[in-house]
Length: 547
Image 1 (tube, rainbow, N blue to C red):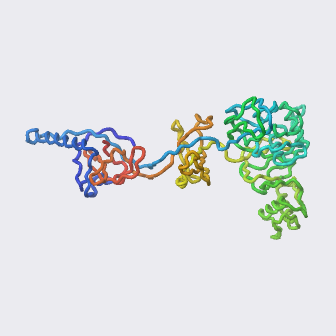
Image 2 (tube, rainbow, N blue to C red; image 1 turned 180 degrees about the vertical axis):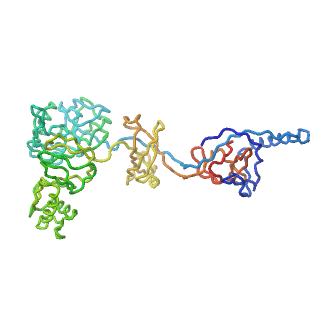
Image 3 (tube, rainbow, N blue to C red; image 1 turned 135 degrees about the horizontal axis):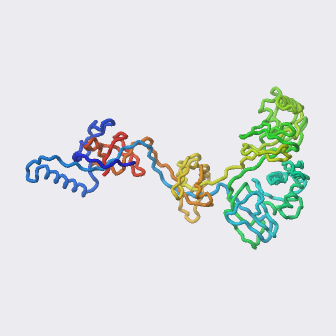
């Protein structure tokens, strides 16, 4: 609300007594009706006495000081004014919150020993970063969403093996180079099976790390981290003794993503494009043969044919029925690969062969025909593949979940309706910068203060931010203000709060400027905020006197 320059006006019409306050017309600020029983009055006795003194002075000049009428008109007076504006008016309250990371993880010692090397507070953690050394054996960070829980070696199978394989590919150990610098395909695939090609890759990784080339990945040599991180704090020191499970450090996870790889040997060509992958999509080609993705947590690691039974058969049948291949309505999803399943498979492969010439139309599903795609997979960053791409190459990345920076706070149970999930809020940083945030999580269970049994139970709240000011991006923790909208007046007509005058009957008025004279106009005040007040009774653009 900006004030207009001071103006000269004729002496103000005496404040109206009860019944004299007028409403201003939206077009000419003229009177439109009377409001009985209202008399504007200033706020203190001193102001009333000052008015009486002014009235006495005016009378003295009007009658020449000796009872005779003076010839000159009253001198104009200077007043400050402001223009009524129309805008949204918001009343907010402030709640304290803490800026932190959406995900943090505790790193514990996997084996007993003496800490001979340790990462420092604030240090970055990338793939293959040495986090600590225990008894001079380095423990490096690999990226993955499940912790290591055992030693793995040739012959082992499982998700932990697949995680090791993904990291070896990312570090470039899935292929070698010949004397000319060309890539040599080793047959390494990311399939969760620790075979000879996996062992060879592990040995080359160990040689570069400077440790014994055992071909095995022991529990103490790798720690799984969701993604690139930074050290929030360390819990031990070099020279400290640790036992399995003792905390070593806490990491703030800055991003969490995993990579998708070819699980078949041969020259690879990526087909999938950016966006979500659905069951039935061709993900990549191996020697021009399509590999079809099925969205599932199951693994397709065997051939399926007439008589096969199991959960992988059920996943296949569910896909076929959903895609419209149901053997004329006779296919039943029952985990049994029967004649109707075989008929549906042939129908599906026949249609697939219309686009891909090398598809063999048969009633058998080969292990190389399908690849499991984790539910929710959305292609993010597509890898640049060499030509030809060796087996096991990274094809694309996809997210493992929400990460980044968040603001955490807590609210009374009685206030939960003010901050439901999806509520958009403003977050104010210490330097005054305001960014938008969205309530992403409200706990379903309350917490209590053990030091204050009389305190109200609290609900934990997490707010995801649209952005972070550059000047606080490196801080691991920061107190911020959460601005909560308590009341909103949309499209309100507002004037400076100081322009509001109380009347003797409990009402309110403003002094409106019209030409070189003013008059008091009755108004109904609404929301007060930011030094202005919402008023009903005058139009936008009306000039009001600001005492």
